Length: 583
Image (cartoon, rainbow, N blue to C red; front, top):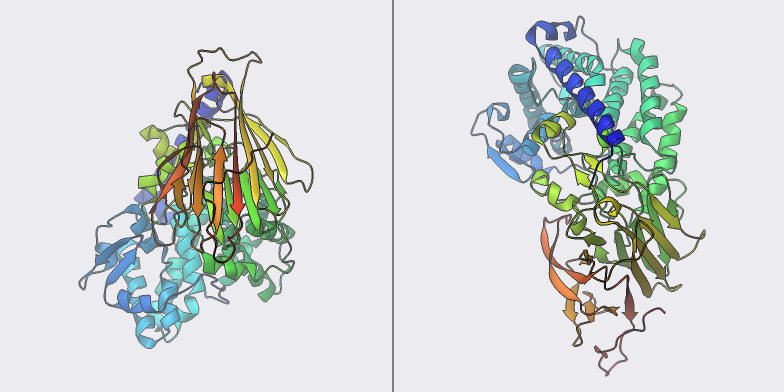
């Protein structure tokens, strides 16, 4: 995939900007500079925000015993401080240093767990309270500030004056550092969460009110930049919406508790995000796996949805976020019809244009591979590839190109997308169950435009689709064109799939014995191994339906998915039945 001169110039500017921010961050970390972030006076807490995240009291006994199980890794401290241990993974360190586990201690709520929480906070202040290369990273620092503030009533109950002063002084210093280094934080969700943390501190800590106007203004600016008009996040990651609401809803409550009018930008952002939570949900309550979405935090999602007063049906069109939804009967279909996010916000975005997911009742049928809850970095680049999505690949390539150099990865905090579809065309009548969409992600390398046409029946029991390949230059394909396509349909691991005898169809058996049938007029259908990574119980083996061919031989491939009504009592289902395909 070729990059234009304009895109190269823009990328050079972004890399230069990132390098400058990295330099400023290293300067701020120097011991001769860090002194200016020291707290000059002791503030006190006047209020604490609510923590909406689910807590597990049974985890408190593990932490008390020195067993820290985070991100799929277990560290047994054996009477040593966890902050002295070598982290087994970066994800483990992020969880430890963000102090998100304090809520588990609070759930147990005993004198022992309070003393344990204070001891661990004391250990961190002694070991890393001055500086730590990971622990003082803006995203981790923001999460720690929010957690300390949220759990302060629990931590400070029965605390002596000495600990209270140390706690407040350290918290003040962290807030001061976060405020002074905000511009060096990573664009997108990390920066917005840092701004949210500063607003928490302004409302909760005495002596911070002088920063209220500036922090509220910055919050409004970031919300306008990052929350799109249809309620999606600019990163196009559906999971970002759940995390944001878990912080924005308590923030709105803080303004009310302090008898202050919450910013209109905050209210508008919450009102826009709420319908999008329902937009991305399947019938089983889980989110569709697009653009970095991992396992759905079902408990947290239910908590934030309880604040939704409208409780209306999901919208069908999210043009700014780049998604389409079709609901018919008890069937829901979601499709990615958007362009990649901007380069500096695309570290987790996927090359999944025109991929779709399909669910019926409580069953997810067609899925994307998603991202696991732990060991994300080991899987991230694999799952971002087009082949990990239920869409078309050409010549086993992705529809986007990723900047994978080590320098870029350090500067951008990940692997951004530097080239991909530049135009996605969508044709759909309002409220229609038919959709036609195309993208030019393969135009520069293969000279091919991919178009996908889908039609869902009114009762939701039949999905007819067609994938069309047209030359990007308007000419006809030559008969000896060598571009090879693969049309993939990843199946949920709960689905049992078996090929029909003629090789052109697949029977899908659901766990409640209901049947769906996949059929195509292509030469053959293959069943290949796949993996579902976004399960709550970790990665699971599954299969994918794949149709192979050459664009020079087949310019369009039709396929269908149809529900087979349950057989009458005493009869046997006709497994050889092949549904009629659309004309």
